[in-house]
Length: 151
Image (cartoon, rainbow, N blue to C red; front, side):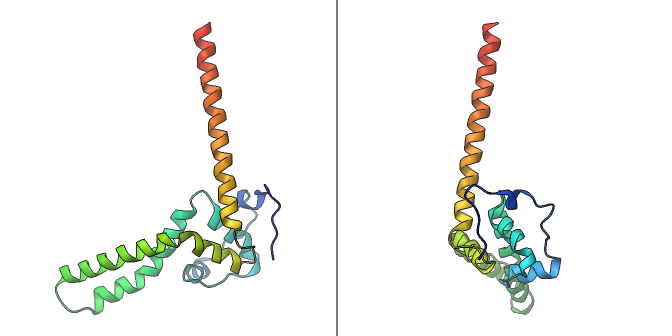
């Protein structure tokens, strides 16, 4: 099991040394396959990066591509029926996927050897850090504006 020290986000931030899976491995990963040990830091980054929810939607879209193609190709009837079926299916899949987004990503981390709850904890820490940094920048700008007015 991988262990992370509280506040240690260096593995998330330093992607230069973290190997990324190739396209075929990524497709397998998107469909739920585990990745070899050398990609476990990348999995941590994948599900805790600032854009983690967009990455989740990209994986979900790939998973939907197969049934969408099958419906479009093999369903008899006029095109509008096929489009309506695909639209309804995508809508339901999106609702389901978004409802279980956090749990799905936590499961990916557990498969990569991290403790359950690691992703949520790191995303929360990153959000708090980002909020503190934003507040500090706003205070600094306000102080600069007050200094200019006082001149």
